[in-house]
Amino acid sequence: MNDLIFILGRRSGTSSLAKELFDLKLPVVEPLDKREYPSNLDGHYENLEVRHINNKLWRHFRSNPNSPILFPFLWYRQAHEWLAKHPGLTIVKEPNLCLTWPIWLASIEKEQGGAPTGRKIRAVWSYRSETDVAASHEKWYGDMEDCRVVDWLRVAKFYAHSISFAMEFIDTRVIDLDDPDRISKATEFIMQGE
Image (cartoon, rainbow, N blue to C red; front, side, top):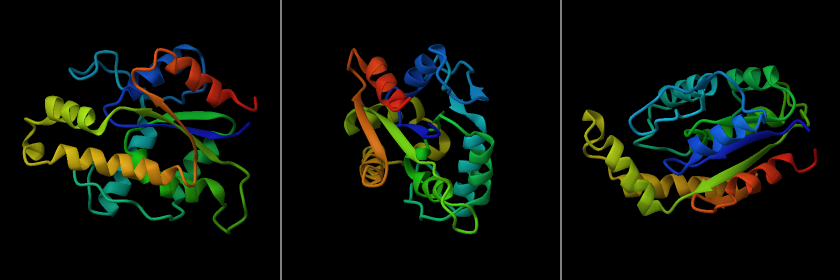
């Protein structure tokens, strides 16, 4: 299997999910941000290279995670090159994939000349209610200078709608943050077809 697995969600247990999958020796691709943060003592387990690519996309489209946009379905060379370096089953967590997924989808499906790659994206959505996501954002980021006027509930709703839209194109397993079997359900979904 050569699927790319996204762990989707924001402030919804994606870091603990990624850490658990990593600890189970599943192919959560490094380098990972494992630094301790006040908002996440075990680290975020975000792929640093994918974060770098997504940050370039934010700058290119003159936006940021607190003022989100839905990205277009465009093939992007740097995403395609990253994907080429990671053949086979690949698991990646980076919160901005909730919005940049159309570019990653276009970049995994075709070579630059348009020939199909045979790879696909699947996703695990670590679900948490929009009001809980907004409250978590407010708790951890509300005092930051550039975040004081952010309508966190509106941002949380935008992310949720983007992921819901992604489900029309990407095989996605929704797993509630509070589900006691969420790790086994995520693992089963990830490994299907292996």
